[in-house]
Image (cartoon, rainbow, N blue to C red; front, top):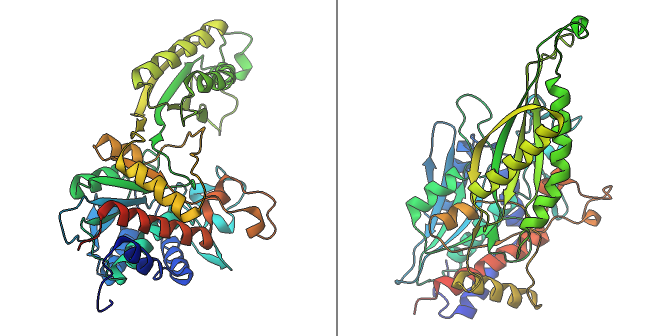
Length: 433
């Protein structure tokens, strides 16, 4: 720690930015990637993050949720009575990183980028979650470390949170918890920040997120035997489900266009289907179920979404005479922070100062994040994060698919995001005299 701390915002920012190194970002990102943390199993990673925060004099702590799920947090105490700011990133990964859990649903094989093992190729780190969410978590850690190492004396507290259960996921199995922002909610309730920044994919500041509603649809038919199809009443639930799914897939773009507004273009998908006995193809099932994720504009209520979805499902079922029912499983409202709020204005101002260009928000968003949890709990929140790695930074890749976009991160981009988080922190927390 320096003998004397900088005394004004510009010098505090410069001193902290000088502490940011690509080597440290690679080290942090690699260490986080190397610890598996699928949703519901983050306790080992939370312990590692808390340990690293404590080494940097950031009072690292683990916040247990159950035996296998935990978040981590730290604090750089302010020297005055300024507003507190929480820099936040989730830490759980969408997939598990093992063949038994992921294949064939993730693809025909588990590629190297889908495994929790960091592979550093120049300025690119590859491995499960290297960009989303773990590259973002590394940037939050690096920003807080740099401010602490520079001797920055802020007026308000800098809080850093690393939440378990950030993925939109129900329990993967017995003994594991659901996601949907459970770790973020507990961190906010514990730390009570005045403002928040969530580090999540997208190199621009945004201030609203879609919500989501999940539906389970049940299509009923007759359980019978192929040898009796022509002799007994016959209604194939799987065939009816297929027709209804096809109709919904045609309807989803209409949903998007009806509810497109401001930064949001809410999408929808049929994501899973289940019915019948794979070991007995001679017998039809009485029931086929499928599951839908319908994204919500912040100005669309869960009740309105359920009404519109139910009406369309009734129409599709009626058109073919199918026996169908449905239920809503999960609903997370979309949220918005006023663009006039200090945290949004500060984030945009700092982004423009860092980049030297006018800020333009990303439109057509349909990704839900823990920003919804923060805003619902009363924390004005900005979102800003890393761009997807460009194909030219990855030899042999002509395009970046969904998984590789989450599993590869450019350290040059990480350095830029870390410096932006430092600037927002100094601007929002203030500098103690």
